[in-house]
Amino acid sequence: MTLYAAPSFSFGAPLPEPKTYLIAQSSNSISFRNSCSSPLEVAIYFKNLSGQWETKAWYSFSPDEKARLNGVDTRNRYLYYYAKATDGSGKVWSGNDTRQPISGRLYDMKKFDIGPRTVDYTHTLTCPAEQTTASDRELEALEGEVNSAKSALAPGFGLHATQLSEAQICAATARLVTTQHNLISSYRRRLGESPTPRPVAGQDCARDERVSQEQDRLIALYKRRLAR
Image (cartoon, rainbow, N blue to C red):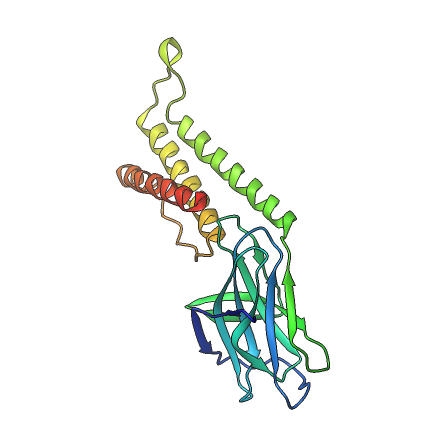
């Protein structure tokens, strides 16, 4: 029995097509195999049977699942893909061969070659272990920076407590806003979301306090999402 993966999004890409070569008159079907321990989603950029370049996204794959990409048939030898884990681990499969828009965001896609003859081609994805480790280290470092920035607002307790001046409190709050934003940006990247503009900090102390409180709520929200 053949399994078919269906995309949640599809549109025709208007950008100029890369150089490619036709392989045969009969069409070729494309399958993906997820040999990673994380569930993932795949977007693919391919030349359809009408000769037009088209992007389809997102095809979902559980760990160890293999399925044909429903609606992806081509006579072209080269195709492009972008894949991302959906478990919050930050795993990404990408490249610099073409950049295509999906729902208002550009994705760097990797080219793969199905060969000069017509086949039912299967492309296998394995876990990018080094990238995952680097992503984990980045998150750990950013979380540490946020904790340090919070500690600067309460530098002592009891007999050794330090009374901060208003200027010191404002400066520490502005730094906290910046470090919180950096952490939130890292969470968003791991979830495949676009970054948000950096908030202006250091000009209005009361506003910085409100922004910091809101960003604290966002951090807690993103932590829960990544833990799912």
